[in-house]
Length: 135
Image (cartoon, rainbow, N blue to C red; front, side):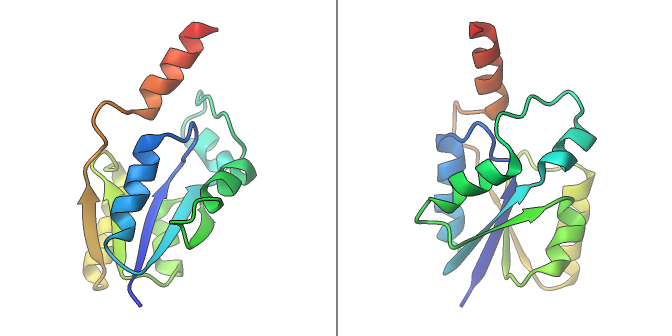
């Protein structure tokens, strides 16, 4: 069985997230979605306006029939070595230092890395900004 993992915050869940999961699932037989721990989000982005708790985001993602397993992670580069997977599916915008270290680890350990395109016209930051303006 070929296992695929993708990671993210998945707050303000939207069509782009669903498309990511659909495209990631096509890369294998089993899709693991890692949801970032809320405390870690606020540690790295103290001004982040997080709508859902970690548990709520896990519940949302777990409800999707395309997702086989949901786990929590803090830092992507220290998380990946702890799970069993074959393909690391990431979005084109996921390229900060932690992702760079994670990709390097994958390359050094025989894991395939696939960059998936963003869904045109959909962005979590834009959605958050729009909602905040409507208040």
